[in-house]
Image 1 (cartoon, rainbow, N blue to C red):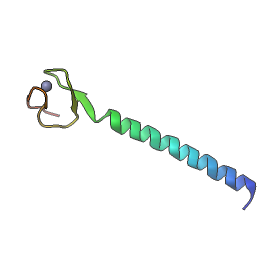
Image 2: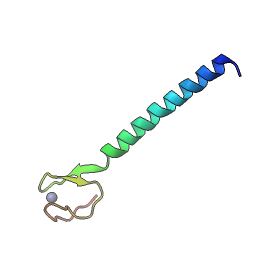
Image 3: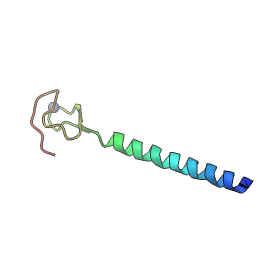
Length: 58
Ligand SMILES: [Zn+2]
């Protein structure tokens, strides 16, 4: 193994880490939404709002 292989592997790991970070951020941001009735933060896809109890259609 040469030194350039180690550098290439390091860059690959760094790029993969950045990619995973963006992916996790995108997933987290898409998991919450605002209730259209009470404007509270709710979990995206939940059948009813936990704050005001309104039934939600996604
Ligand atoms: Zn609500």
